[in-house]
Image 1 (tube, rainbow, N blue to C red):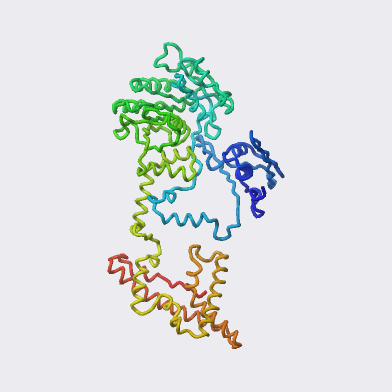
Image 2: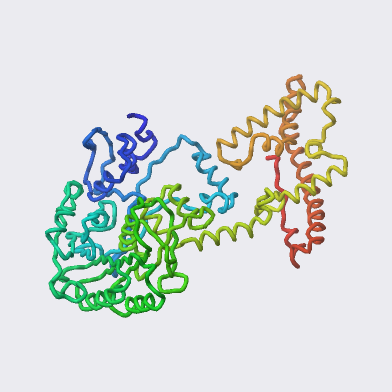
Length: 564
């Protein structure tokens, strides 16, 4: 539809194709963008993109400026690969420029400014940044081997294979090998209709355990060409032995680069066993390891219950005897940690969190509400975790010590509520209101017709000036029209007086009067500043604030003119 196309002011070369596709056909995933991002186009004048699914199709004409070569950048949710040593990376970006918001920008800008004054403890969105690309490993191609699964008739275990074949992930495996004790049984479990639709069948291969092999481990011949190995173990009594054997095989394998181990039923491990497993993994084997330990697996849906993690092999990382974890969520964790750079050489224990007051519960929920996909969510949790969130709360409370009393602190001391209150009390004691002090007028009931007319003209002038400066972007975005009028009221009254006398036919030199008015105002502002400095100095001295260079700092303050 025309409403989904970019405005005429937007440069054609900066149109985000995926945005247009999603806006015109309602497709919310990144499939279109991923497809387009793999190609470069040369000397393109016009493209007609046709998107067809099983239920609908749409045609979107896109006019692009001619260019020698144009590549479309991946979406914000796509993984960003780590560059191999010696390789260079080139970053490209696409943007859709929208000018209809004017100088003030979109509403989200003012919303973001409001969030900055909210505690992360009360509103987690004030702590989170916009979802961005994540760093993925650059060794996720070639052949992958999955062992320990597809051994029971109660389930298919296909989900983990689907995760390894996900088109939106960083995995680019050419072959995914199921290492099983019974190939015939495994084929019945994995050769499904969904595997055909997703393209898994094109990559899936089967390899049978060699009879008599140690701990059902693949032989060196079977490991040829395998670059990534996902290992599933759910028997606590043999976990130490199987991990030891896996590390030995990995060490002898010349092609293996990534080893990911999922320990289910980890609540049956004691601390000594965990330390032994960790010691084996940390040995200099020349591979990148990833280990995730969870409790007894359940059939709970993936992502339904938030989680927290601790370091595996430590007292804090020991699982309680009644620990449980979603099977599908465990499959998600091990595959995401395998593809993320932050998962390299990490051994973590994951536990479900049901207490809404726990920071991990709030953080995981907040990440999902903020639009983070699972890859981004897990990357944020592993890299930063609740520690960064807790630190943000502490930093905010230090910056805004009176926040719980409804007061936020700014860098401008004159905007501090306490200072404003003291200043108002001082003016009140002198028999002046804030408006009287700024304007110097008598009570409303004592005003004559001339004064009322001048004030009416002054208000109109101030409103026009506010609109003009707002359009020019020279007025603070947070300042309201009423606040602006108060700040320029002296000048507005001068303009009103001049205009009133001109309406009455009086001959006058407006330019000369304006120069004289500015001179008076400058002297008035200097006097007011000196008085404010003295008052501020007394206040700070009473509180023992300001330091030894207080007088020097105050002397540097300059009056802010409101007459221009």
